[in-house]
Image 1: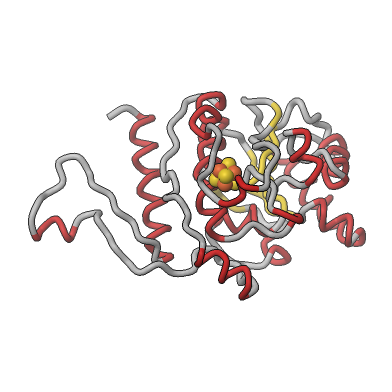
Image 2: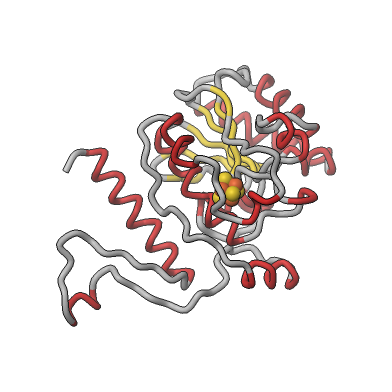
Length: 262
Ligand code: SF4
């Protein structure tokens, strides 16, 4: 098996293991899998569905998630380039966010970026323009990127969910579950040196844990062998300008790791 196929197989297994740990119903039939009773010990697993996203969500939102039929997530998104991953996404209707969007906001920037910023989801302006982080929070992110001696063209910017949640509400667990394989595929293709996870949804989704962003931020972590720095989301910084100092400290760590003097 080639290195790439091995990597894809490992990613698929990690994803399935995560889904199983959440209690998600998972059905996988491997080529050459045993038939009969012994096969029950193999990778075919059935569990009762359970809430998936680590974040506590309001009961009304939980109710909507559980009551909504969601197409099974694409656990392994093929593609060796961002264009191929985008083609695979297509006119996506894998979750209910497709209903209110104007367009899919896939991502923008350098497909070979050494630095990738991952946010939560598109807002109103992003939904209109089809480009991530172009509203007020996006303007702040652009300033942050430039303060780090990069430009938007040299980095890559994307979100956990590619369609705007109505009214800019938080993405719900089923939506994250449906869209997240495409984020993983983007990161697999780009292979950046550093990922900056902007806010709790990006950090918790990539790290598969529910530690609050206030504790995650500023601490180097690893995502699939890539250095990951969690920090505050620019939208939060607009609401809480006193926290900008902490975010800047986090970004200075990223600069150091990428050989830029602060
Ligand atoms: S948020 Fe993601 S999974 Fe849901 S419809 Fe949009 S592109 Fe598809």
